[in-house]
Image 1 (cartoon, rainbow, N blue to C red):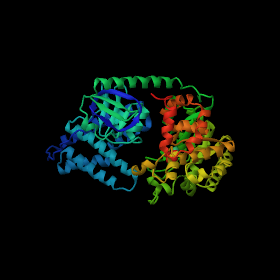
Image 2: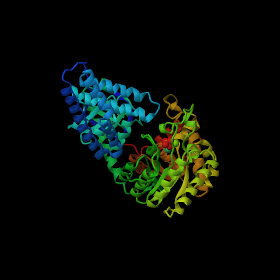
Image 3: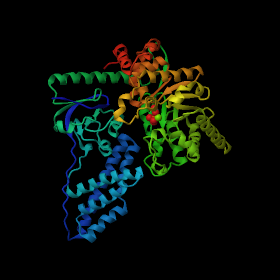
Image 4: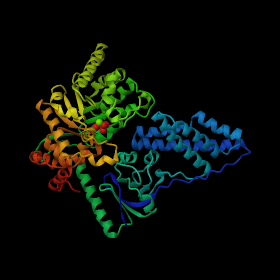
Length: 575
Ligand code: PEP
Ligand code: MG
C-alpha cells in the first residue's frame, strides 16, 4: 500500500472497490465480402444500435447533468445521421467489397484528418465527436463491449486514464462514490463535472491505472488529493473517521443554506456564485447563493460556428434573471480572447493573446457584436435584478466609451416602446493592474467593482496563468496582490461604492479571512463552495481580521501570509 498523490479536484472521501475503466481493444481485419447486401444490413444494424445507446445516454445526461451537457450526445447522434459519412461507408462496402468495420474506419479516418487539419477550433472538435462515435459503431460490429458506466450496479471508485464527456455523463451517483484519473487538472472537464456532481475526485494522479488493480479497495481523498489502494486496517479506520467528519461538516454547512452570511461579529457579506450557463443557476440556489456575482457570457458564443442571435441571448439572460428571483445577477459582457477563442470570428493569431485584442477591446472595435449583446441584456433587465460589468478595462476612456454605447442602446430600445429597467448598476472587472492602481479615479464613475484575481494576479506577477512552469509565481497571498486588493476596496468605499471579487481567490479558505478583514462586500465563487465559505465566515470576526491586516500586508512572502492564517485561524475550520 502506497499513497498516490494527485490533485484534489472535488472535496470528500470515497472508499470503495476499484472499477478500472479499460479502453476496449479492437482487432480490425480487412476482409473482402461477397454479399454486399447483408454487409450493408450489418452496418445499418450497428448504426441503429449505436443510436439507441446514444439516445439513452443523452436522456441520462439530461436528467442528471442538464441540457448543455446532454448536447454533446446530440452532436454524436447528428454524426450518425450524416448522409455524407454514411453514404461513403456504404459505397466502400458496395463498390470496393470491403467489410463494414474497415469501411467505417477508413471513412472515419478520412473525416477525422480533414477536420483536424482545419484552422477553426470548432471544426477541430468535430473530429473528437467522429472518433467517439466511430468507436461505438465498430464495437457493435465486432461485438466488443464499450464500457458503459451507467451499468455499474455496486459501489465503486472509477479508476481511469481520463474520463471523457460520455463517460462522466453516464456516471450513476448512487454507485459511483468517487473517481481518480491519471491525467487532468483542477479545471479539466472531469474535475468540473466531479464538483458539480459532488463526487470526491483526485485527478492528475499519473499512475493510478498501473498501480491499482480492478476490485482492490481504494480510498480517494479529494480534500488532500491522495489515493490509497489496499489500505491497512489502521489507515482505513483513519479515513473512515475523516469521511464521517467531512459528512458531519457538510451537514452543518447544509443548515446554512437559507441563512444570510454574517461574520461572528455581525457583519453581513454577500456570497454569490460564478456561472457559465443558465443551467448553473440550479446549483447556485441549491447551495444558498445570495446572487450571481459573475455570469461568464462567452459560453453562449463558444462551441458553435456563428454568433448567437439577440433572441438566443435574450432568452438566456431572461432565464437566469427570472430563476434568480430578484437576487442580484452580475452579467459580464463578452470576454473572449486569451485562452477563450471564437474561431468563427477569424481573428489573426497573436504573439501574446492574453495581452492582445480581447474582451472589451474587441467589443469596442466590433460595435455590432457589442450592441447586440447589450440590446439582449437591456431587454432582459425587466425580469430581475441585473447589473452589467465590462471585462478587461484598462483605461477610464474605455469604460466611458462602453458606458456611452450602453446608454445609447438603452435610449434606442426605449424609443421603440420596449421596457428597460432604470435601475441597472454598471460596473467593471478590476483585473488589469493599471485599473487597480487608479481605482480611486474609476470609483467616481462606476457603480461597483468586481476584482478578477485570476487575471489580476497573472498581470501583476507577469506569470501566465496557464503556464505550469511559472505557476510558483501565481501567488494570491503575495503581499503585493493583497495591497492592490486593499487599494481597490478602499477606493470604492471612499466613494460609497461596493466591491466584489469573482476570481478563484474569493472562494479560497486562506484568502477569505484576509478579504473579510479588508472589507470585501461580495465574494463570488463556484456554487459548491458557498456553504463552506458561509460557515467559515460565521466563525471569523471581521474586526479581529482587520486588526492583523497591517502585519499581513507587511509580510515578506506569500508563504508567510499563508502560514500565519493557517496557524491563527484554521483550527476554526479544520475538518
Ligand atoms: C478573473 O480574471 O479573475 C475572472 C474572474 O475572469 P476569467 O477567469 O473569466 O478571466
Ligand atoms: Mg479575467
